[in-house]
Image (tube, helix red, strand yellow):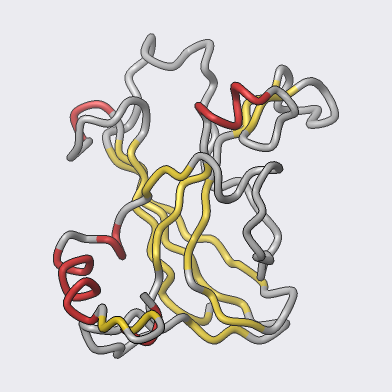
Length: 173
């Protein structure tokens, strides 16, 4: 909880436990808050971009690398406060032609919006004390570096289906 308080409720202990449980290091699924049916007031500080691709026709048939690491630049399109990293799945009939049919959390087919949610990972400004989760200040034109680790097969640390993702916003690129 940014600032450690919500109205008159002190949530600093909650924030400390959330950090101990790794809330800043894992994606959590949220089905209703970010989709096209959401009423939450939010805005994106950068354009969405693809950070990982997989061919579902081959997935599970060929051995995938147990761990892959990459780095991506996120360019801010507006001033604001970054509270979280948000991820989602999109599946295309033809990945070389994004104008073709696809399914995602944004699809008009409500079943996809409920079963392919957005995933959210809280972020905190550097040097924020454990009881606070202060958002990361961002200015239009800033370029932030996002480190991505993808674990599959024997490299996975949890029992999640499919690839396991670890995202880390490390600051300006």
